[in-house]
Image: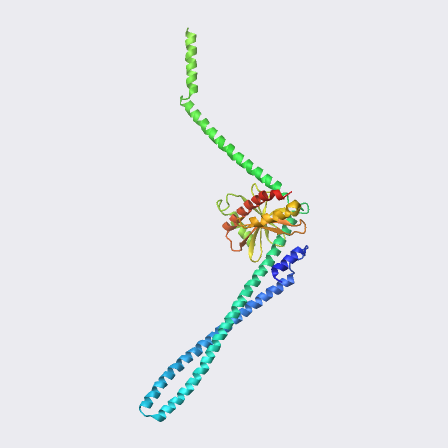
Length: 230
Length: 143
């Protein structure tokens, strides 16, 4: 059973009573231990891989040398034959036989190492994937635990009185009202700003004796003077 | 100082643009795990909570509990939540079980533990907006 379905079963079953984990703590410890072991195995495998690759490189170097030797002895044998040194040619041929035998053995060894490397690499890839998978699963369990514990802390902090969440719609309405209040205040502030700036303009005009009011006052005064003089 | 407190301190110092103009107030809560309550000015009714596990940071906003769901419309509501899950930026819907309060519906965002203060600030701002939108959209299914 996958970890996710275990978590789901635990949650659905209401297993998370106070003080009890979603997945039992011992299971988590075992799981963590498995991951640690898998990582340690992976480390060993890497070490093994290094050794095998080193051995293969060494054998390959030997093969290269044997091939060179064979080429050298073959040309020596031909020279001997050309010079009619039959006995010497036979001796060289014997040496060549030994070298070729050696070559076959070394080539076999190289091939074995090559297969071994491929196998170890394959195992490593699989175990890396397994570790990643286990870690992801562990993350799911731990996150479930964290959320559960956090939720408990939160409700504990609000005491027994707050057994229920505040009604969501009412909360939204209150926030919207605050938002509306804020916007209203902004609009009011803007209006006030406009008004006070026009006020100050008027007063500046009045001070300069340019506004219509001043003009009207002067006209009225002139009219009254006219009447008085009559 | 815990890792979470260090992060919160950094988040409270990010500039106004990174906070999307919101004013956050952080209040650590006592309990088994590190939890910090985040209150946003003028949105005090919908606090956010930050907590963390070994691998990730979680920002949660609890929306409503099962008692607020209109029973006859419950299936429709769940359907709507699943459909809105993907379009909703940075957050997802979830249900958290609580032994005292019963099932609680929530929106949450998960982040890497290496998230920057600016990332967390954006997450919180977005989560709060998403929570308000979610209640607005889901109102017809609620009591």
